[in-house]
Length: 199
Image 1 (cartoon, rainbow, N blue to C red):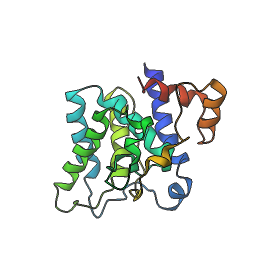
Image 2: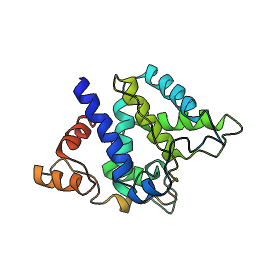
Image 3: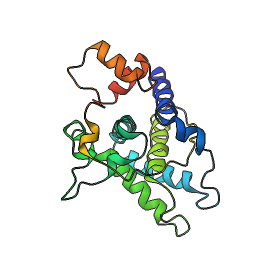
Image 4: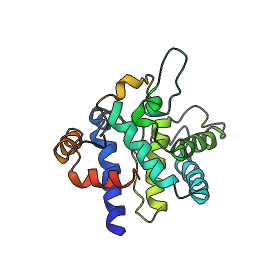
């Protein structure tokens, strides 16, 4: 179990840094919200802890949500955007219909907790909240806690069409899976760890 948690930690960090390399080097940093929302990490951690106490499904649901978000357009929380009458969003693509509601609920509850603090309201991106929540569920499930560099911007575009060909399918063979993950800077071990959170 400890080895699995360590793999999840490495995977989470890999997703954070490898899928948005220009963002990671340009603006992400620890204490990004030090002046605008200095307690954001503890606010998110408390909200995630409350959700975790309600159901352990919070752990794989949040990790899988982060994975699906990062693989499509980078770690921008665009998977959370709702569809409208004129636009079918990422979350309603067939490949995302199996995402557990507990992952979305974790981010929504953490965002509500952050926005309940007047100085933090509308200052913290959902993309950063999802990254922190992923770190927190790993720690709550027995893995290590680690610093998350913040400063991600929320995606403004979310279309179901953008998901096409970006997520692995159940009928993919090992070579197809390895190629897809390698294109994102991830190893076969990372792929296996992420696959384990999908069930």
